[in-house]
Image (cartoon, rainbow, N blue to C red):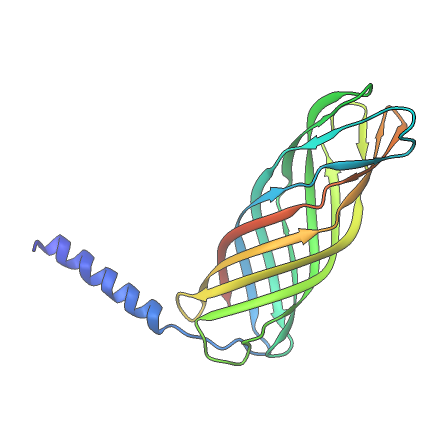
Amino acid sequence: MSNAKWLASAVTAATLTLAAQSALAYSAGDVFVRGGFAKTDSRSSIDLVDPGNFQTGLDIRDGRGFTYGLGYLFHDNFGIELSGSQRVKHDVAIGGPVGFEGSFRRLPVNLMANYYPLGGLDSRVQPYVGGGLNYTTFSGEPEGVDMRRSYSAVGQAGIDLAITDNLLLNGSVNYADVRTRVSYEGENLGKARLDPLTIGGGFTLRF
């Protein structure tokens, strides 16, 4: 075996051994920073103010973007987290007499309380669930369209997998009950229901 192949094999073996032995205990006072990339699937429906006047269809396409999170454990099993993403671009089309196509950008911010069932236990795998409040603003709507900001409930489930004592792989799913009032040329069309489901992955740094 060449020196290069031997070295590569040794590094791989050492990495796998380290990963197999790495364990950590979440505990009160821990601070986390998360970063990653996620895809969002939107429900895309609209409740008309007066359905008898016209029929309107709403189609909002999936969006992708970078995500972030900052968390703090005030107890071995409980913590808070502020999370969100860059402005996520969605293509949108509204049918009916109003019909138009274009895009808009969505900026979500979440404040959640998290529960860590294995907090305080020495484990490579640290799952968590959480819930709280979502605040979403919209920008870049097609000309004549206005989408109002939204306040809603949000929930998440995730898991951290220890690589080292401070670096972890992260995966999560997030669901928010987002609704926004939509108007076109000053005329109220009703409330659009987005209900974004976001699935993503990335890294967690523990301090």
